[in-house]
Length: 624
Image (cartoon, rainbow, N blue to C red; front, side):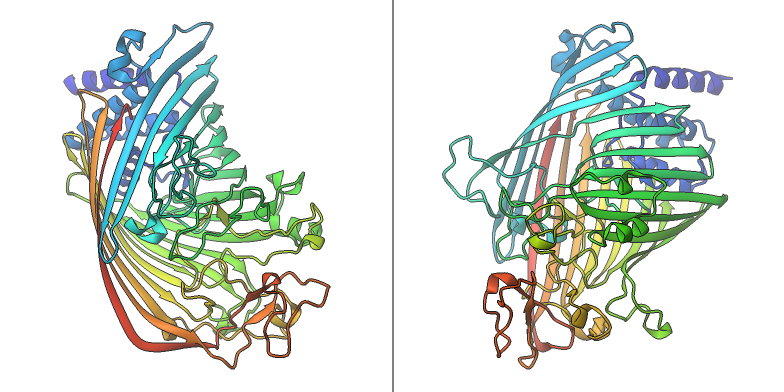
């Protein structure tokens, strides 16, 4: 009887805590997702859609179900209680949020009027990272964010923020595939800095802006969720995925998820992509326009995904996505349209990608998943489906296991293969662009970062990740990555990147020219082993969290060169003024040409070099 009373009180409290914020998304870095995923593995709740983020209302319902389960331990219930308390503090619900509580909570709110509520507040974050190795590195991120949050008539939730960043960027303090920043657009020197803040590493602090607005609603008992905003998204199984990854930079988009039944989920999204203005010294340039007014990468992005669960535990999904020039185009806005067919009848200007993934959850044991994404497919030759260079197929597989250490401990083992040319695309010259007079490029990038898995093309990554809650507001995360890179099709010292494209001339891209088959193992030139551990402590008495992390990166490389007998240059923009190649294979006008490598001109050396780098980070969040 006592348990029933306690459970009833808890449910009533959580209902009040979440009142008025049902449709706003829960950020992907919340512990709620690990708790939900671990509960799925333990058979406490059924499998959930792989399209994230979820709304607060959905998370609330799942946490209630987990809390009331007989499989949930007392320690795990305490973690849920703490998480609910964190939500309460962050969202300003469940207690008096008047101006007198501004110092305690970081926000204040007015009274509810005609079903409308409004809350205003601010928060502060800082993260300092020091890299120690052959080169010393120092990266400092500092941000103050003011925001308003509210709900209109119990139907429409909204969040608007304005963040001011004061950063000293240094990519050398990170594993390069993990490096990112929050500043939208370019850094400025409004504070009077006369130093260079246009290339990483910065020589001084630069200031910039960040924002993540969101308007959302849920209808018919959450059967239909609609969101318009700029938030982190994760569309697929595993730690990042081949479609739209958590690691991708945010972009403004309109999305809908329809759950007409418990066994099917349909999601669509269309958004406006941004550009990158931050080259990295000593690294391959990020893909995108490096100049403020350039617009080769002036693109939109659309994706649609269908998930079905024909029987308990087994889930299958299929999706399509397309990067397309910003223009008025109805084809990619129609959720019932097949993107590949639309691309064809529009004129084959856009870059379409398609994928499938599967997962099976064995209650009490774990989840097994596999995924495949196709960027280009040209040969059905049985022995060359994977090895054919023009069959651009990314692969991923992994497993997740609930570990009885701490609360909601989860272990992930995952392998990912990103083939050469995956996500890249040739550039149309200005005269070929029917929507403007400038060149047009449609690689799968947003603000210089991959939209899909954060790995260079022609690479394999083996990953192990573990996360758990140790009680008292302490969470632990461990991640080990081994990234193996090939240089078979590379044209630069940085290995194969999204700048390396499969040329589209008929004699190079069609059957008249044959790129040699993939031979990944024969051209390995780089192996990076990264070991990272992070600890975070949240305090219940005051809205502050502390985090610290340590990382060791072992980078082993060998040199390689190109065979001089191979002509490396081909015309890029197909100019009509005769500026193509001279008799020696050298471009007459370099700016109109680019290198290509058909895969048979790379010569590997036996000289290996290993560097060791450590990174230490510490951070604080106030009114998180």
